[in-house]
Length: 276
Image (tube, rainbow, N blue to C red; front, side, top):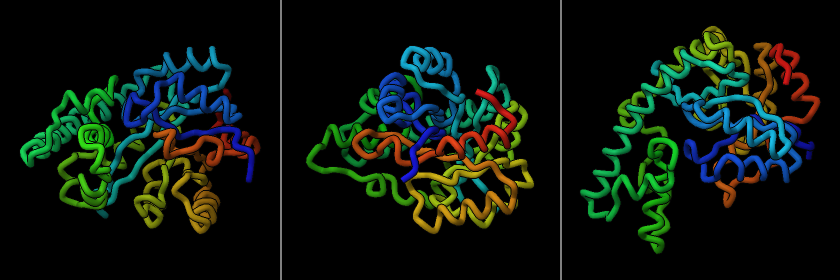
């Protein structure tokens, strides 16, 4: 197993992760990770805190965000991790801010529907698990499991399939072309995240035509064939290879198993034309 030098995909409780910023940074430091990108969903407004706490802990960071996109031509979710964001990201902020409002309204409706079905749950109970942002589905699940510990609810039981077209359209995700172009307009590097999760492989060429510059070649959801396929696609389209743990929950996810070796990270910096 390669030594992970850089983990460029992780989450805190500023979106749907469980840990505070400093808790995640300390875990990464203990896992001997040298570079961590916290890529919370659709928000970048906490990077100053990330940068300052990273300095205190002694770990380098890359400013990033995971943009929640959708390919409306083929009805698939597409997540774009944008890395090396500058201090100001007006294009990303405009798109993501509007989407978070839609997501919040959708999740408030989900909570109401659950309450109407007889579950003793409300927005405040869910918001306890999301102190800095809107309520995410994972926060609703956490609130349910806290209220009904004997039930052990699963994501699919409560929310159904992630491939439910009707529910995905109701969410109002960002169009993938708009997401990629917003990242480029702000000077960031748009990278296709975990293409295995949403079966995005057939559309990679199309996303490259939109300006996609990278693809994750290491992710905890990948199987052996995915590692080979993502590297082949990176070579075919001259894409930057990125990757990370997609860390959310210390009880479920481990740092130091997925991401980039130092050699892979140095290659990423060279192809992206970036420095730390």
